[in-house]
Image 1 (cartoon, rainbow, N blue to C red):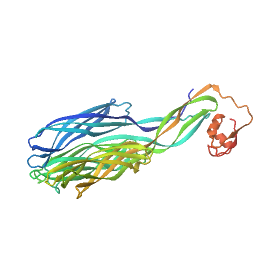
Image 2 (image 1 turned 90 degrees about the vertical axis):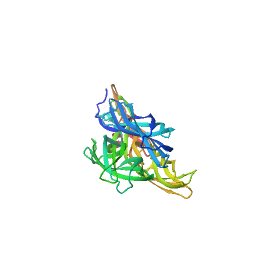
Image 3 (image 1 turned 90 degrees about the horizontal axis):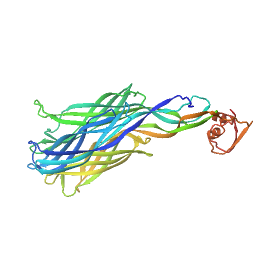
Image 4 (image 1 turned 60 degrees about the vertical axis):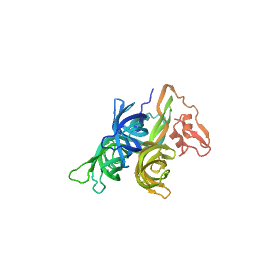
Length: 509
């Protein structure tokens, strides 16, 4: 027979999908009439943007666009120009065991792009990017808890964080950005947008979020002269999202990603300078945990009948860490082949960062691809790329070993042109997200009782046992089919492990 048990349950995060797919992109680009001829190509870029991600019927559908663009020097005025083309992409993944309350995490990474000029006005570009997809659900696990008094159990108290909330929401942010105090914007050459949360508060199933969007844009301020300018704009945002299960006392972790964005010039006939129309789609992921301790049963035996306990590996979340680390990465880019007269802009084209959990905590490793746009001594545009290595242990997650979600973004870049034709670069990064401390224990999942095999009673009037230092009282009680609590009481013992050799009286039931 099976012992009746009082079911205790808890929930823990379970990754039901963690995969990557390659997407190919081919573009045959002919410059529009308003774009001048190409003299020299500075850089071709491939920027994927995710517009939607949905999970239904065991299928994860990810749709988006890939913006393929070229930054070049025009033939007549030798100024910097750009032109691009947008192509769509769609990818589906099969997801098993996707319950309600899931989180879909996606990210893209450009792998390569090849560009070939067929003429000063026509380009053929071929590239690829990787689409990463991860789905996190909440898995419910039962803890074995028998009701019968004749079943002796060995319990171990462990830290346990119960996943109460597992939610995600997408929302749009729009803003009209005035550039009245900046040089006129006539054409956007390239842009970079990142986002992060600055504060979050949980109130009865809702999250009150405060965050900021960093908008960095490099543009032509005068098409006739080829003058360029930069715009660095910090856009705060507020959002309230539904997240069933979060409360004021839950321990919460968050992540925000920019899925897609669009920057357009908005001409106003009443203004000398056009405004910038900005639209972005953001996605916030959140989890809420109730932290505490729980008793798990690591062994069991019956004092009345023969029995066979069944064991299983029990995975629990022992602790939760909110990742939030800001630090500086420094590098020096030596420019060979020409003498630089002026640096126009330095930006991070991509941040390829992976987070790893281990015994020492969570570390971040990867590369920052830095792009340097400058002028040589003849005022001809020069474009240089340099990789900056990233390898850092994150102090905020030192007590955790499993990263659930993390986002690395560049906050700011400062630089200095040295006399020996090198550029000293100072890059400020922030890594944010959430991690947990995952632990595994061998625990009893059930106990089979053989009621046709009763335990033979001890016929001895008195049983003495000569125990050695370091012996477990549980093992002694189990061997002699008595109760651990009674054994400790009869021998006036407080510790479950003997500190010295001694003789024990084995009590009868």
